[in-house]
Image 1 (cartoon, helix red, strand yellow):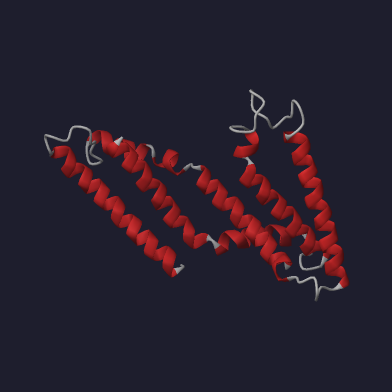
Image 2: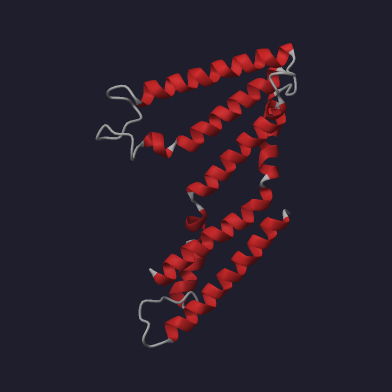
Length: 196
C-alpha cells in the first residue's frame, strides 16, 4: 500500500475514533443539546445500518471509472507516444483516436447544445442536468475508448481480455486509495450525523 495512503487512512481512522468517543462525551454535557452520540443505541443503529448508504457516493464511482480510464490509457502506450518519434502505426492510431474524440465531441454538442436537446434539464439549461452529472463518466468512457483503440491499433492490446485487464490494472494501481476514501466518507457522514 502507498505510504501516503496508509498515513491518510491512519489519520482518518483516528479521526473517526475521536468523533465516536467525542460525540459520546459531548452528548453527555447538559449545555450542548444538539450533539447526537454515536455510542447511543440510535447512533450504533445508524452507524451500522447506514454504512452502505454512506459509502455509496459519486466519489466512489468516479474513483472506479477514473482508475479504469487511467489503466486503459496507461497500458495502451498512449501516455508514452511522442509525435516526433512515433512510428507509422502509432501515427495512424493517433489519427484514429483524434477522429474518435471529434466524433465524441460532435455527439456531445448534438445531445446538449441544440434546441430541445436530450441532455438539457426540464427548464432547458445545462445546470443542473444530466450532462453535468455524467461529465466524469463521459470523460472516462472517452479515455477508455481512445486508449483501447490506440492499444489495439499499435498491437499492445491483442484481445478483449487485454483491454479488460488494462482497465482492471488501473483499479489495481489505485487500490491503496480506496481505504482512505471509504474512511473519509464514513467520517464525513458520521460528522453530519453527530453535529447536524
